[in-house]
Length: 574
Ligand code: ADP
Image 1 (cartoon, helix red, strand yellow):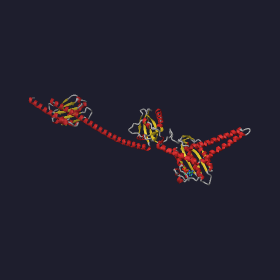
Image 2: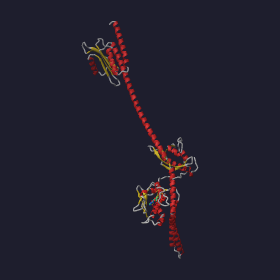
Image 3: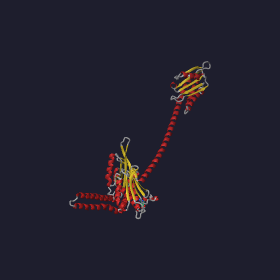
Image 4: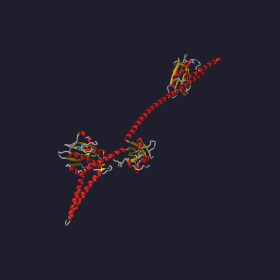
């Protein structure tokens, strides 16, 4: 071959190389199948090869792309297939001469892409006698490398896109989750705000605030209503000292003691005391708290309620004052009969004393008779003393006193006082008292007032009837749920069924000169003892007034109710 032919060959090779080097630019952003097809097309159309086969593999396990172009002899692809069946990997380029044999036989070449053809391979065939010349091999290698690079790039781009898409998708999911969360938070916040508002309103309406007390740090938490009750600024940090400053000086030592005991014992708090406000007003508050422990059983804090019970105490006092006035009035009515109850044993004492004097004056003095007379004097003296004691208890103005009491005993004391009254009006009063009744925790004087009122009403009722016997029966029995039932039955004119509930209204009376307060006071006393008082018809005639009381008739308050009125206020202390 002459130098001209060489130059020509080189020129063509250069042209082909330039043609090949422009191809990768067209591959940018293309998908792997387009790259493989593009390469096969270039080999067939620009390098004038008869057949081209391109296989591009994804070393990361992605899909393999295979493209064949040109009108090759069928023998070459067959050879390729056989070759791959026999050899797992193509490690070096292979030149196949005389494909198919005979005249038609062309020549082929297979070039691995990447080490051990892990990037795939490029195979080409041509019937040119010098194929594959060195230049052909060079061009094919360049083309294969370009394709491999483009393919890898495409994969990278694809991965990148996929990663971007995955990122976008997870962003979308995150956004969705965040939106959902925000909606939920907003809903919960609204709910919480609403329930907080309800709670604050409920606390305002019930005059009950709440508190939390972390004893170890001394920190207090107060609800809005608690701030209002203590009349403190919401900006102030509530402390035990602040609470003590607000405490009435007379109660301060007791409150301090109660708190000290609570911190030591870590048991529930339940106490009542007075606050003294800067303007001199006094408030009664009731504190109930219980200790909170964590999972390991360690004490955490006290939580509880602060109730402003000033109004309740005031009403209670008013009720007590009214009940007292009514009691005094009733006792006033009974003066004549009670005087008889007292004068009887006194008269008997005088008689016995005179008899004793006579026995002493005898000769010899009969000391045995004297002793008996003196015994009777002592008994009568005690009887008179007892009557006076009971009258005093009923008339005395004393604060509510709660104790375990036997209801039968309380009834018998009242019936004893009314004995004279009963006799005076020709009434037959019977008692039928059940044995083994539970003790009632309540106020003896108040409950006796109820019994007294019911019996006096019954006496007044039977007094009005001219025919039949004037009968009265006071009975007790065990009530359901560990309580007692007390009934006063009479044979009076009975009750108008349409007016049954009116009887208990204040100022309802059918008696000339009646006040109409008796039954209303009785009902409020029984209700304060968590009981029930009602009226019904007696058979064959008359009325029954009965009340039921539970065993624990009165809330167990650790301290006596305290006066709520400011006049009793002591000096304001800090
Ligand atoms: P007062 O005795 O001053 O009238 P109460 O409140 O004790 O006031 O009684 C209200 C009214 O109930 C009485 O006026 C009477 O009409 C009626 N009442 C009370 N007890 C009886 C009874 N045992 N039988 C018939 N009516 C009664």
